[in-house]
Length: 198
Image (cartoon, rainbow, N blue to C red; front, side, top):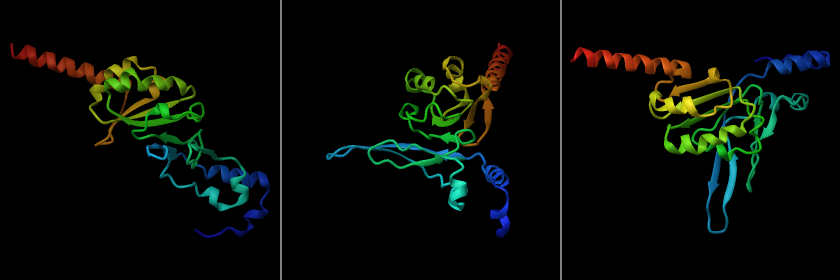
């Protein structure tokens, strides 16, 4: 990419708008690490997501506040740069209850799970603390149908139409309403087969 040398001579408002337009939604990977040692435990968040390039561009771009330092909890704190309005916070298999200080800032959340008793009865209760969510993506480590009860009974803390289930192997994505429809079609097809065999 070539350098536009007269950029610094543009009016501040125009430069600010240009910097704002460089911000794009990202998947920000965040993991909670809890290492137990005889001499004491170590707790911290880590991320493999690179620092946004705009923050490396110049002092002016960094000072616009387009990204915030986040996930710096622990006795070995690090930090990750996040734009909470745009970025999807992807926790992998990190227990959502380990996210504390950022709960109210996170708007988009992704995590990887099986729909098991632990998630259904315990971990999902932690979603209530994420009061400002507008979107949730669940990477399903089991079948879509395994998530029927969770879809029906978990308090998802975002508009239900914005809850998405994604098959890990294929990347196929459906929402909960599509999940209900798939189940109804499966039940109907099963009935048809059973009636055809009688």
